[in-house]
Structures are given as structure tokens and as C-alpha cells.
Image (cartoon, rainbow, N blue to C red; front, side):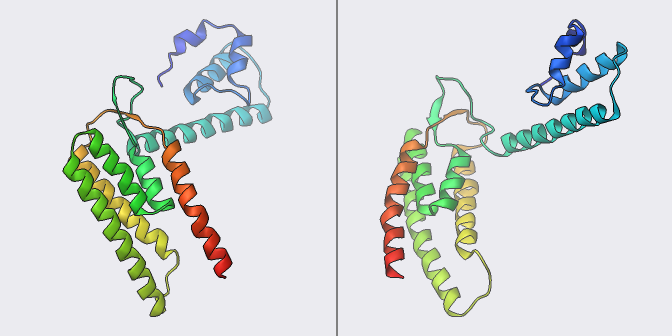
Length: 207
């Protein structure tokens, strides 16, 4: 967010001090401008106070840059427009694929295709999710049998499956330019958790 120094220069010192407090919610640029203006007006800061404000500015810059990177990579086309089409976001599909399994990520993506009236693709992505999940189970079991030494095999395979859903299906058939509202994942999350509860229970009593 761009901040004009001239606007901050119109504020009095008490208002500017509010910008540089530890709990300040203003962006890094606003904090820096406020600090600079106060110094220009002859306000004296101890070395300790100066270091605190400078660290506050740097911490805010780091957080803002991380948010920008995340926004550019994930869900960069999501909007707040209530008239835009509701879709499950790219980030949610990645997360569901990795946390719950590729089959669940493929279901979310299939629902997106259905929303876009791409019913054939909806079926294709479901079929992919099913076969990939079967392949993943057999592949992991085989690698375990031959004592293939690598950790987090499930996570690795799920990550690969999520990447295929994103780069092969989303980018090819939904595209990078589409604008959409993020659809709530509350119901899919509850369904996944309810499915996993008996599975985890059976695994526990099986041990």
C-alpha cells in the first residue's frame, strides 16, 4: 500500500507517535515516515527507542513482503466482488491434497469444473484423483517393502499429486486470468474430518 508523506506531515506529534508504537497496525512505510517526520521536528529518541522503531519497520517490511509473495503465488485472482463466481481456491486445493489426500483435492477441483460447466473435466479430474490415490498406496507399500530409505513418502506423493492438479488441470483449463470469490471450505473440511475419524480409530485399535 502506498503512503503519502505529505498526509502524515499534516498530523500532530501525538498522532505520529501512535504510528510508531509496538502495537502499531500501520504499514512499514507509514511507520518510517512518521518516525522521520518526528525527528525532523526535533523530537529526541534514545538509541534503545531508535533501535526498537527500526526493528518494528523491518519486521513489518518482512511480513508485508511475505504476504505479497503469498498473494502472488496463491489465490492471486481471488476477489471480494460478490458478483464473481465462487470457486474453491488454488491454495485450498493444494492444502486438501496434501493434508487429506489427492482424492479430496481432486473433488474440490472437480466441483470447480462443474461450476464452470466443464462436466467432462469434472469427471476426468475425479478419475485422476482415484487412480493417483491407488497408485500412491501401492507405490508407498512397495517402497516400504524394499526398504527404500526416504522420509515423508506420503507427503512427497501428495505434493506431486497436488502439483499435477494445479499445473495440469487448473492452469490448463481454468487459467491464470480468471477472477473468483473464494468458496468456504467449512463443509468439505468437516466431511474430511468425519471420514478420517473412523480410519484413525481403526488404526489405533489395530495396533
